[in-house]
Image: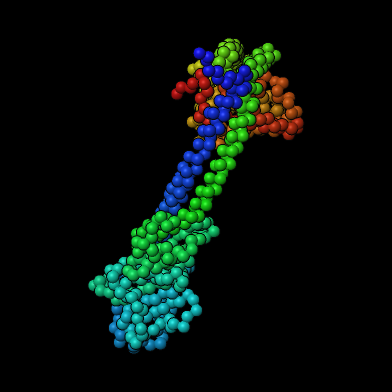
Length: 589
């Protein structure tokens, strides 16, 4: 029986093209279909979550507004100093009709003026109050209108119509502030509060604050931000048809949709998504309304984008299949490039990553061998650095023989001249200098000890040079307990004296200041000596040694900043990291 012959590709390129078509293009098409449905569902869920989060935020903001209104109403009614003064609002509302009928014109004007002053002082403009009414339904009514109105500011008498439902709503609230919504067309809503006599808790009247509903718009988004959705503040507490007090958004027939929602006749399958949260202060509802048809348009855009992406990916997969044969040679190219770089540079670190095939195994072994050689080289370099460090430690422990000779010579002369106290002080200062130089073998010391060291050094030099040398030290107290590398300041000061002030004619001054800023210890050593050219300091040993020690312990990012002008002086700035403990160099208390 003849064996069935399958189509065989003689080249790897042909095989890869076939495999890419089977394993790449078909799954991409299936993935596109699944992605469209998943993205549509997730988009709807995400939009709903966003709107639910938004009404929670708006509820918090509205709570703040309503609380401000409540506090303003209470501040207006009850005098903070005394609740039972004869001219207080509560006592005024509790008067009999005969009291108001007998009021003189002067007293009426006086009452009106006092109430107007209190209104201006208690009711802020930010609440957007349109009208304020204070009524006892017993012969007294005060009205403060913030818009043009023919209503009298003070009405005395019982022959006037009562505001329908306002007093009843205030009574039903049992002394709490009651918020009454009006239709959205009026652009207003009311805050009503029943007023009690705090002596006998008997009601004496009520306060009505009519507020511009635009106040609610300060915490709700604008219509331009709400494509296919709306937010509404609805008063459903009074029974009957709910009143839309304020709304923002682009949903058409919003009131009809909200009415159907409250009547239970709104089917979510009809294309609407509605969410609600009730405000704890006003009792009003905050609603969001989503038009699913608008979201469907967005989903269609996602579907078209997904289809376009799939087509692009199909093209890309085809191109990848064509180019894949060239990619097969990449491991060989990587290996050849790595060998060439190592051969040319010697210390080249291989960054290429190799695969798991035979060529990749060879590449990884070669890479591992090069890394071992580099590690050995780094180890030798570190050993050399440690050796250099030991040399620097030995150098820093030495005291300048010239300085020591001059100091001992000065001490001897003082004893011969009958100045034992100065000789003793110089001996003590020299002792302190030796003490810090030794420092129990520790490389780090406190700033205050370093400052003490340089102070002792300057004291000795002052005794030698007399009036020719002056010095000032101003180091901030907050850095005294910080740690730093020892013997940093003294060599710089020594350089300032010997190379800056000693050649100068007349007096000279060395100023040392220190402060902390941005996590760094900053020292400035400044002299008004002869100065030097820009790079002359690099030729000497003292400053170069300090620079090497700083970079050895703290890294090359820290250096000396030298500013000098011939004939004017030199300023050297040293910056060290605060609270830093370098690797392998530990300090002890």
